[in-house]
Length: 347
Image (cartoon, rainbow, N blue to C red; front, side):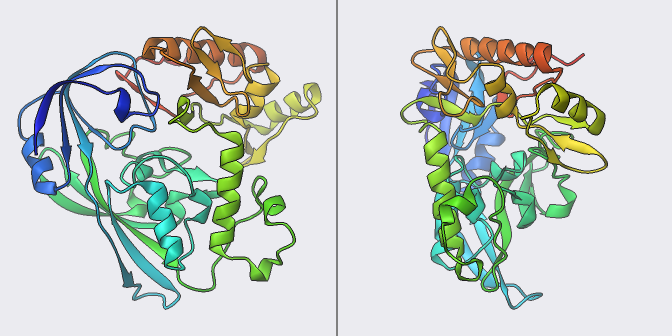
């Protein structure tokens, strides 16, 4: 393990913003990670693939690139139709999903092609096309940062919600995820195909003949048709969370916008796609300087070339203010912004 000084992070996060880290190291072993965390350098940031972060200034401490790898299978003692899959937190998420499909396991197919590492997935409770990580995650191994102890947590204890978890709230900076344990189906797969365009991509395949691999291929085709490749156009995927509202507000908006899209949640609550709001407000393909909303998916804010983190942040704040003025919704970023507190607080 080597520790480097004054490293440009442009190649270590998908927005590609040129920012410096005072110190940088890549670790593939837990012992090396513990050594660095005990080094006394502050602040410390453990980075996966940087697919959900926006740096608005240089990082004054130590950035640790998590490259811990490894995965294995074991029978689920509680269900003969399931397998428990263990994976290290530094594995690439999409490569891991494809590996589970190669083992003829189901459960993660709707989460195909989501960028990032496995260890970052629970923090955000990643989700797509009607499936969330919380639906299939069984347990986590975490490193308690202030004691250096390894602990096992049940998924049910992690406070998973829409694009959130306790790791983003009261557990922030307390734990580092080291291993994940998934309960995946080995037969009698329960496929989720009703969300988005999956059904149309599956064509005439009868439901009883569909496989997790086919669903994954459909999801990948949809995502590639709508989302830019970060290697070609800097972005962090969906920049904003989808806002929630009550029935009365939703119904009032429906009168004004009959084409309003919404999805029922719970107790008369509805989710309104932020992409619909941005499209309706005219942000699709719109740019300011070197930052834009993508031409196919306005929810994706892109660095069109050489933009700074502050430029991207200012653009996102401008977009959110416009949506607030036109529709009354306050958009919250799904992307983690450094330093914390850079995003304007709500009223």
